Image 1 (cartoon, one colour):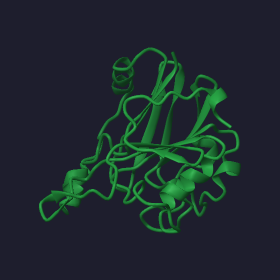
Image 2: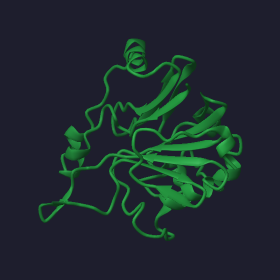
Image 3: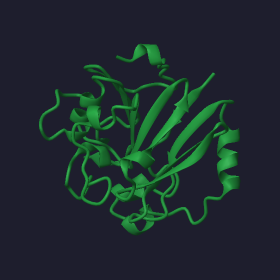
Image 4: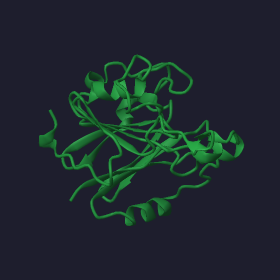
Length: 217
């Protein structure tokens, strides 16, 4: 069976705990080498006919993701430096996905998110990605208040994914930074995977969300 495995941005090359402790120098460990042998080992660790996407950063300035699998060519997306055409890939089961790194998809000009290529931002994601069934963002750290309250104009991650989810499905995967408030874990975020379909957000998605092309509007 075709399957898609989604891991957070910085899955290799980033330490979210050190980042929230203020040790930025050690947070961005970097992946010095990511050879074909590494990719083959990642593929072999998953079931047959799997497509895998994960973060593999060289540094804070060279954040990137890879998409690979036994039946797909390896796709490399460099944050803020990859146009839409080169972010899209068929992932099996008749589905096509578009991949983004850490907030690039939000349509925001902020330094935390920013344009996805040159001076381009993603407006109207449902129409700009009309050939895609899935929108996937691999975030490096927590995205505050993505689930527990109705979205407002400030919650750009959730709003943008809900816009796309009117025609397909959107997935956000992110780390929990290990931040605490008065010694207790901060709870205004979800530290795992969130799936958006239609008007609904499915928090704490466990293991597998199965989506067939016939399920999408």
